[in-house]
Image 1 (tube, rainbow, N blue to C red):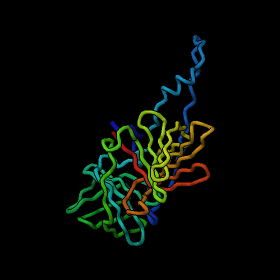
Image 2: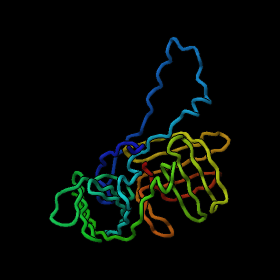
Image 3: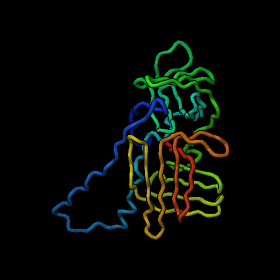
Image 4: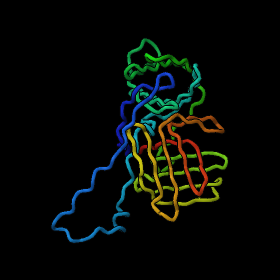
Length: 251
């Protein structure tokens, strides 16, 4: 089973088909210590036993093997990941999941008043608020755990080339910067985890080595190749800001 949070059914999507609403995740209070317990917590043991968080499902392509970029009219760029069981759809406003629907030809998916119908390289996206006529632009293979063992999320960008990887078992990330000339692995803590909005913000677990990593479930396109991704990634480190795209990687 994938180690990520259950996919929430999103509200209407797209520029004219708008996404709205967010609910911020709030951690439950820690349980009171047992009256019979006289030992204090061991911080070294706590750090060693810490587990990686469950990321929002909208950061993942699900069971889909490919991601597709669509160029639409009126002007809007979308990303999809499709299987027979579902369609995951990302726009500049966020991500959502649509279920299969009956159609005479092609493939159709629907969630509420939002529908996505495609046949071949053409697609029609409709809701009560508008319509988009779309065409396939670029398709790429989704990242897999086989290709990236031990990684549950990877983000990357260009000029200078960089990437960041979150370990799938512990709250730890590895940053590779300046075309691979610098690499550092650090623990992190979660400061924001909003499943409904598909947003995660991480901060350094070491005060002496600060950084912030922001991950958002929104359509993203590589600045050099145009390849599609389901997440936007922003890394702030040493007064520098790195921007790029990313994808959750399920087991």
